[in-house]
Image (tube, rainbow, N blue to C red; front, side):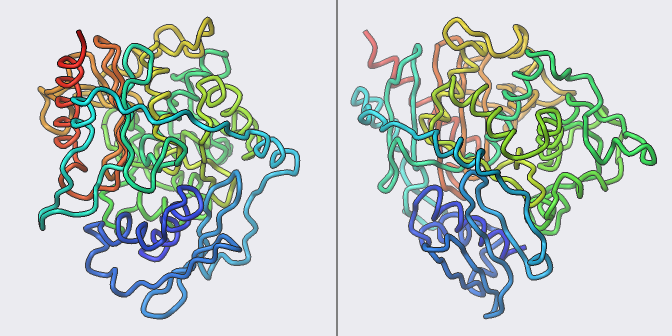
Length: 432
């Protein structure tokens, strides 16, 4: 588990985000509370020519991650070295290569008051540290209002969104619903559940979006939990998730777990065509290109299923563009890409929680887990591990995208709540 996570984080950080491997290890591996006690036992070798990362535990080989253009980073272990991953055709590779991104414009610093708000003090329990915030983009009334980048980051740097990816899956499902190819109340079209000798468990697209599948997929990021083991170790992650038993009737229990979103991605991919190239073309043509998201990277597992739970990278501006898309009700110019009621659907509370369908709702009255007192009612947000947030404030025409590498202060919702309050106040003080 430790070696696989290390190989993957170093692979994406080195070959997608283009960050120094030692920095990636320090910020995104060793700093994890679960890894702190064993980081000393890990050694890694990064081959920039072959674009691979090998990780060793106590000197013994444990895993290798390979960067594959268009498919992200795939982790292999000694037991699956003979397995051949699903790849891309030459035509698919040419299509992806054609999606060349034009240079982004200059950084917009914004008014001085907002500049100060964008630079939260870098602290940890032990005192000052490397700056946890890597990028912040503020969109106001449809325009780029201000942004900040830490050293080594720019408007062109793809940054991991972790569970922000779940909100991207929400958008892609919405596009398919608008086109009439999916219904949220239909049984999830999972190949393993189509087996006539294996009854479908009654899990719908809605259940997967809302994390109410009822599957017994405990998740606590400890490495001992089944959800993390599937995400890190399994070659065919969606199929492995289908082997979980039902712990509750679908729709009756909320339990946040990445395999729900992996299954959702498998269902979506199955409707689109079932292979990575078809998924890439669909995502690019129906969402990324219309939104102007030009620096996107997706990870696919060995079976060719997109990692819909976490492993998407995009620039901070791209993440903000996603937020603007939802702020505008799923409309780009004269084209509506999402159903008319999709935002209401996505932000309708699930059971007695502050979670909707791929988005968190600003329901802070339910407790600190669920919202931000410094954001007005009606706000909602995408949220990812290590301090990734896209906060959408419809009443003020405001989107705040914050990407980080934090573990501790600033990582949690309280830290983002403080930043949202400071930015809103700074904008109010800056505007006439």
